[in-house]
Length: 157
Image (cartoon, rainbow, N blue to C red; front, side):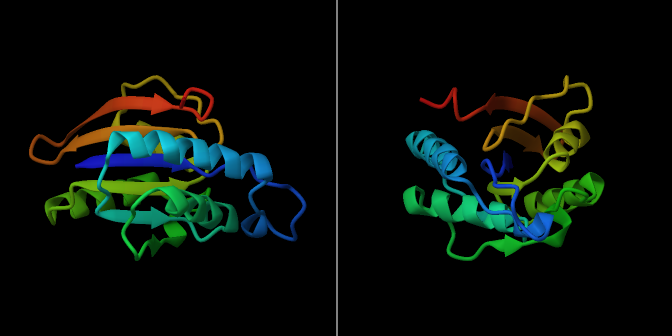
């Protein structure tokens, strides 16, 4: 199964709670750049998993403007910054066993870093800039995951 782990775009800091922070104009542009880059890859996503935090939801909205994505995403409280990477790893492996072939996950630091480490423990830590994305290939039969690529909006041209 192909797993695409994306950090939300740049967000404003003036909100009542962390969950209510919204994307900045720059964050929207970052998400658009990533969406155009992904669109060239012609990836068909089976499932979209997204944090309930506003900035992650808004990142998904921007992606939907450009990409063809499944109509229904699954909002998961487990994808907030303090989520459990082991639980999410197990959940994604369950999706792979059910036949899903490509999943987009939109979340936050530090969780996105922890997820990559959970799947690829020998991988050096990545720099997850806002709206950066990592593509992992999960071989459920071998219980192995490899890092295919990691890209930031600045690199996505």
